[in-house]
Image 1: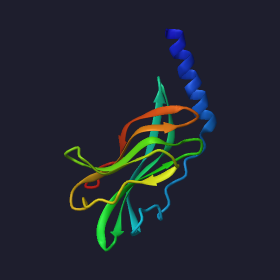
Image 2: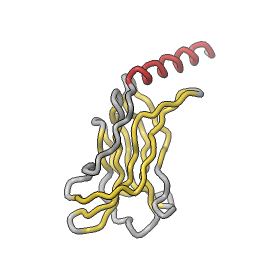
Image 3: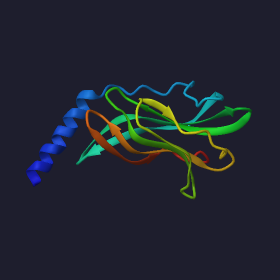
Image 4: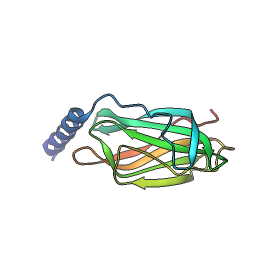
Length: 149
């Protein structure tokens, strides 16, 4: 059993490493429909780990901007080459743990949460779920720093 785990861990690592390139950064025009003039709040790497190894598989960014004449914020995921959504959830999280504007994506490499009316409290971008990298892989819950920090 130990040998099988090691083989699976090495195989997953090789598959990930073969498909990874430098992660493209999210562009300022990565905004939901109806939203414009996005301003980046913060960003962090999306990491995937197997055993004691980990790889950067994308970037998580929190933006704020005007959406249909209302001030809103949203989260944006940009997966690197060889990775794509496959049950990936992205949202804005408040300090009480509630996820706002959560959307689950089953395809694509660049996508957003819904815009949320949480601009007046501390928030952070949040991502979890699965992604595809030649096989299904699970992301641990990850987030950016708090907006008020």
